[in-house]
Image 1: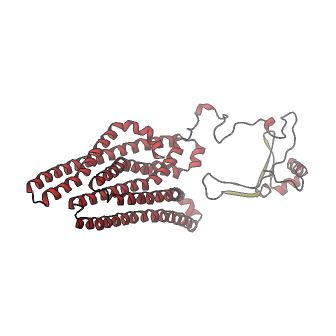
Image 2: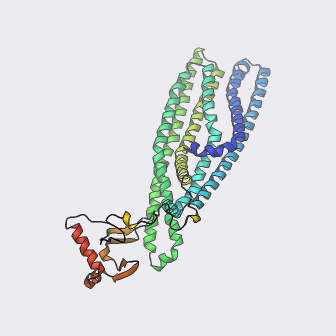
Length: 425
């Protein structure tokens, strides 16, 4: 989760976060008071024709609006500054750890992936922080406050809220659950496209020298098409969410006006109470939509946070003073002959046969191996080492015809493995 990743970086920003909370509480209080003041202005001022009451309540509403505007601007400014500070510290930490990674970790993660984690992933987490500072506090408090104020206006109409709010919550939860794997796949294809493009730009001279332009163009087209498909899958899901939410909001408003109009005709509901209830209903559903926007950003921010956390948890490269023969991650230390199965050391040497079949060499993260060998017999050159020096050199048939050490090793391997024994690598 992004919260676990940001826990260490948020501690330095506690004072501005406290100010953000204060500004948000002030803004919510002013926003919730406005519909009640408007209802009082209509019922006790406009309906009865009391101009003085209209002016007094209008002045209070203007003051509440100014307070709400100032608090909103202050919260947005502090939220943006706090999110940028967190993004700066997080980007510095990711960049420093990327520089400290060992060679095999750089090969495992990939240079293009490291670039994306330092730029795009940090940007996603930063956007989540900005939305959280402005929405995470406002949405739940606005929703709860709107429900309480709607109950004060009319309890019967509040049953509509009890039906609409869970429907919106279910829609948002379904979208978030479906979006998480799609956005993770999208981030993977972004890495692949970035890697392919970087390789082609870096090796453009080699590509032109070997006339591989068509092959590289098709390779980039495949990566670009995969990225497009992943973006379309996630974009279609997010595009469905907003129309569904707006449909629920508008239908609920129509139901409130329909039911409230009949109750106004019966004289059981005042005009101001109906307008105030509609405003509170809009506030409740808008807060649910705002929370939905936060949850829409959450899956992608979660994926980015996982990728950043994977890099930050990577062990740094070993110290250069450890010595060339010291065991390192990805590089084993020296192996004694006694540790090898069948090896008895210099005193009791045994002839062992090693044949490689179906082997190849692939760089970490590469699409295809750069070297393929069905068997070592097909190699262009075979070196036979004895006592630290090259004893024989040549192709398989040439070495067998020479009848030297390689022939003995080959015959020993055949006699020890048998015709039905499995291949050894």
